[in-house]
Length: 474
Image (cartoon, rainbow, N blue to C red):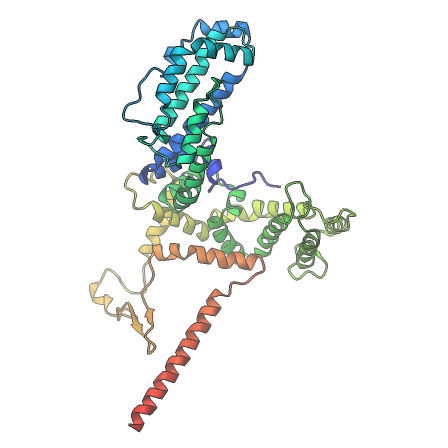
């Protein structure tokens, strides 16, 4: 349907940790984690990933030729630290991994090699045993650094999970360490980062830095805009100004319609999916559509045939008209949006977010330069009077300078222009209201607030009337 299935302006945590793009979001997430002093969580995550990859490689049988060629060039002592004594780190009293490791390594080396050779049918057990012992050493290093009771970079796992890991990296049957021995701890760390640190990152200046660099590199696509709430709000405002918001509404509603289906294309609820299809058709495609989109008779008939399919409505029922709308927005409105005031406002917000970082410079970006220039023009916009003449300042209209006033009900009404940070804090509410309008729903929170305020004013009026009447009687 589109060039990509997600917006590169904001990725989920799993995508960030596995980001292999030319401009990766991972370094910016690492900077954020360093600032909040939680970088050890990211370090543990990648240590486990590297350990798992190495362990899986060791578990693979190798040929005699491959084995001998590596054994001539690779020495186990150059690649593992199994003889190094961890300092300042102790395990739980019930199990000392170092002593067990020494016992197994020094007293049962031959038995362990035989187990490995018989289990995996390796022709030369000496070299492969050394490789497996290196994996054990790596497991001990990860344990002592992140999991043990006195770990210098503790990830704070439970005692139960700690004991489970201790048993996994020191099996009593002499078998090799499994590659999944740290998986449970990795899941705990991932959940911690996802629930606590990832939301903070999404509101941080580091994400704004990444987004500005991404845009400055000329990588921004229409899909990036449509699948990111922040940019979607500004594009929505732009499309309304061009009297073309119906195109964006149709595209968004088709995306919402697809959520009624499972990944295999089967509807979760067939009746609900059919109702959704009929709503889309009657609203946008039928001859009596309330918000018509010109897709032509051939395409409309094709949609009608799919809706009458014996299998029921399909997930791809509206793919063709959605593609037509997407291409129209991409060819006509997307280039205009990049030159619009709404796009400049979006760049301004990114600059405001990173303005407090003295180590970041936007001089290398023509996009950020343009946004900064636009901000400068807005701040220094001339008025009707001569601002350079001090004698003219007092003659300005509304020359009385005050922040606001108090109503008779005790409510403060501001007359000051809110700053940029105020607008940014309200952005989520603006986006919410705009998305409600696209999805055909309404946000009644402001109506409820106004009704509550009116009710409060009536109550205050009644109290004042009663007290004044009582005062006159006395």
